[in-house]
Image 1 (cartoon, rainbow, N blue to C red):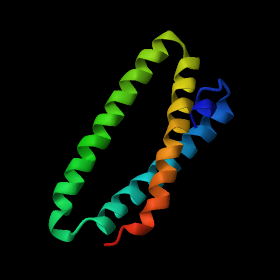
Image 2 (image 1 turned 135 degrees about the horizontal axis):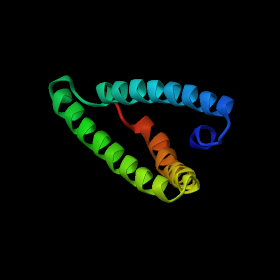
Image 3 (image 1 turned 180 degrees about the vertical axis):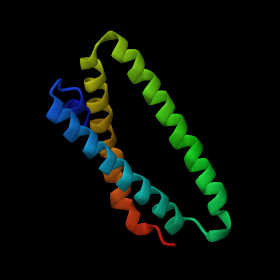
Length: 104
């Protein structure tokens, strides 16, 4: 999504923002529902609290870094975003392959 938003084209930026909204909606729904599936009901409050602490903290750190990179060059923001997305693929594949072992 980042290359679209920072493409300097109005139409591509709009498409990027729409995709960003869709991705955030799906991500929020799936992540929070996954916690409910994995964690017993009596521990969900703590699990959601911890999730929000780490999710929000990671968002803050990433946004701060992207803001600093934006001051240097928009290209660095795009590269940073793409590198982190590619770096997350092995973790996501690992989680996907091991998610069948998790039961509610």
